[in-house]
Length: 114
Image (cartoon, rainbow, N blue to C red; front, side, top):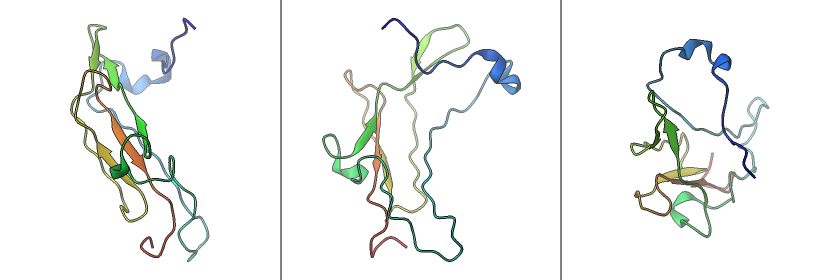
Protein backbone atom coordinates (compact mmCIF):
# COMPACT_ATOMS: atom_id res chain seq x y z
CA UNK A 1 0.00 0.00 0.00
CA UNK A 2 3.00 2.27 -0.44
CA UNK A 3 4.01 2.21 3.23
CA UNK A 4 7.32 1.03 4.61
CA UNK A 5 6.94 -1.88 7.05
CA UNK A 6 9.68 -2.86 9.48
CA UNK A 7 11.33 0.56 9.56
CA UNK A 8 12.43 2.16 12.81
CA UNK A 9 13.64 5.77 12.91
CA UNK A 10 17.28 6.37 13.80
CA UNK A 11 16.47 8.22 17.05
CA UNK A 12 15.14 5.00 18.64
CA UNK A 13 18.61 3.42 18.53
CA UNK A 14 20.90 5.93 20.22
CA UNK A 15 23.57 3.23 20.73
CA UNK A 16 23.76 2.57 16.99
CA UNK A 17 24.71 6.01 15.78
CA UNK A 18 27.46 4.73 13.48
CA UNK A 19 26.71 1.11 12.62
CA UNK A 20 25.67 -2.36 13.74
CA UNK A 21 27.63 -5.58 13.40
CA UNK A 22 24.86 -8.06 14.19
CA UNK A 23 21.18 -8.47 13.39
CA UNK A 24 19.17 -10.99 15.39
CA UNK A 25 15.64 -12.41 15.26
CA UNK A 26 14.18 -14.45 18.06
CA UNK A 27 11.17 -15.81 19.83
CA UNK A 28 10.38 -16.92 23.35
CA UNK A 29 7.72 -19.17 24.80
CA UNK A 30 7.97 -19.78 28.51
CA UNK A 31 6.30 -20.91 31.70
CA UNK A 32 6.74 -18.52 34.61
CA UNK A 33 5.47 -20.97 37.24
CA UNK A 34 8.27 -22.27 39.49
CA UNK A 35 8.88 -25.98 38.80
CA UNK A 36 6.02 -25.98 36.31
CA UNK A 37 5.98 -28.21 33.26
CA UNK A 38 6.95 -26.89 29.88
CA UNK A 39 4.13 -24.90 28.29
CA UNK A 40 1.91 -26.51 25.65
CA UNK A 41 1.99 -23.30 23.63
CA UNK A 42 3.03 -23.96 20.05
CA UNK A 43 5.50 -21.77 18.19
CA UNK A 44 4.67 -20.65 14.67
CA UNK A 45 2.34 -23.15 13.01
CA UNK A 46 3.06 -25.84 15.60
CA UNK A 47 5.18 -27.85 13.15
CA UNK A 48 8.94 -28.35 13.46
CA UNK A 49 11.25 -26.48 11.09
CA UNK A 50 12.35 -29.62 9.23
CA UNK A 51 8.78 -30.09 7.98
CA UNK A 52 9.49 -27.19 5.61
CA UNK A 53 7.23 -25.03 3.47
CA UNK A 54 3.56 -25.82 3.77
CA UNK A 55 3.90 -27.05 7.36
CA UNK A 56 6.51 -25.06 9.31
CA UNK A 57 6.25 -21.31 9.82
CA UNK A 58 8.82 -19.30 7.89
CA UNK A 59 10.27 -15.85 7.36
CA UNK A 60 11.72 -15.05 3.94
CA UNK A 61 13.36 -12.27 1.95
CA UNK A 62 15.43 -11.14 4.95
CA UNK A 63 17.63 -8.15 4.36
CA UNK A 64 19.05 -4.94 5.70
CA UNK A 65 20.11 -1.49 4.52
CA UNK A 66 23.87 -0.88 4.58
CA UNK A 67 25.75 2.32 5.39
CA UNK A 68 25.41 3.44 1.76
CA UNK A 69 21.63 2.96 1.98
CA UNK A 70 21.73 -0.08 -0.33
CA UNK A 71 19.38 -2.99 0.35
CA UNK A 72 21.38 -6.19 0.92
CA UNK A 73 20.37 -9.81 1.47
CA UNK A 74 21.18 -11.16 4.94
CA UNK A 75 23.08 -14.12 3.45
CA UNK A 76 24.91 -15.40 6.53
CA UNK A 77 22.41 -16.79 9.03
CA UNK A 78 22.92 -19.12 11.96
CA UNK A 79 19.98 -20.93 13.51
CA UNK A 80 19.90 -21.77 17.21
CA UNK A 81 17.17 -23.40 19.32
CA UNK A 82 17.65 -23.75 23.09
CA UNK A 83 15.50 -26.90 23.26
CA UNK A 84 15.13 -28.52 19.81
CA UNK A 85 12.90 -31.27 21.24
CA UNK A 86 10.30 -28.52 21.81
CA UNK A 87 10.98 -25.99 19.05
CA UNK A 88 13.36 -25.85 16.11
CA UNK A 89 14.80 -23.51 13.50
CA UNK A 90 16.47 -24.28 10.17
CA UNK A 91 18.06 -21.84 7.76
CA UNK A 92 17.04 -22.55 4.17
CA UNK A 93 19.35 -22.43 1.16
CA UNK A 94 19.33 -19.01 -0.52
CA UNK A 95 17.36 -18.88 -3.76
CA UNK A 96 15.96 -16.23 -6.12
CA UNK A 97 12.40 -16.57 -4.84
CA UNK A 98 12.66 -16.78 -1.05
CA UNK A 99 16.11 -15.18 -0.87
CA UNK A 100 17.46 -15.54 2.67
CA UNK A 101 14.91 -17.43 4.77
CA UNK A 102 14.41 -19.69 7.74
CA UNK A 103 11.80 -22.13 9.00
CA UNK A 104 10.83 -22.34 12.65
CA UNK A 105 8.28 -23.80 15.02
CA UNK A 106 7.24 -26.63 17.25
CA UNK A 107 4.26 -28.07 19.08
CA UNK A 108 5.30 -27.15 22.61
CA UNK A 109 5.14 -29.69 25.39
CA UNK A 110 5.32 -33.40 24.54
CA UNK A 111 6.88 -36.41 26.31
CA UNK A 112 10.13 -35.56 24.44
CA UNK A 113 10.03 -31.89 25.45
CA UNK A 114 10.95 -31.23 29.07
